[in-house]
Amino acid sequence: MDSENDTVVVDDEQVATMVAPKPTAEKKKREVPKYNVLLWDSNDHTYDYVERMLREIFGHTQEQCHLMAETVDTQGKVIVFTTTQELAELKRDQIIAYGKDENIKACKGSMHSTIEAVE
Image (cartoon, rainbow, N blue to C red; front, top):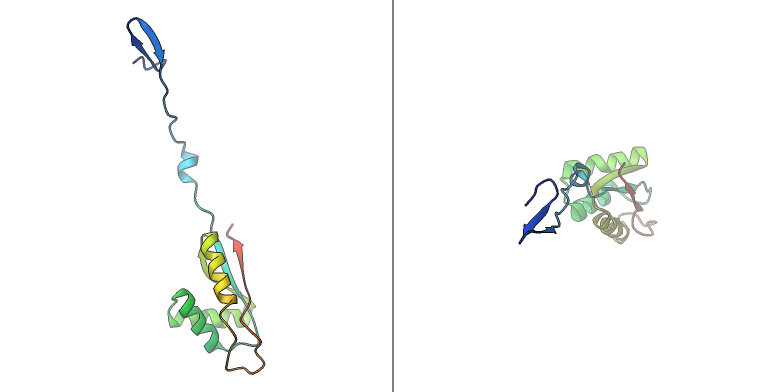
């Protein structure tokens, strides 16, 4: 094979060969986009409800759940998980479908959750 032309000589005839392009550094570094799952504040849910929901859906520790419950209460929202878009959508839907807080009679349903792309 002639390394300059990427050809093979067969019986005095040159035959071109195909060479696969080498992956560029840009392609190697391409990552799957990440998404944050946000939990929004609600006055119709107790800390116990929020902490239990986060443990059951995400498997967070009790300490992490309590900190997230305090954050959503004081700041209005909290990032509870960062993952791929498909899994973020699933986790958001699980929060929305979790159900009402039985400890608050006026509670009408689950907490609100959205996802956002990580920049």
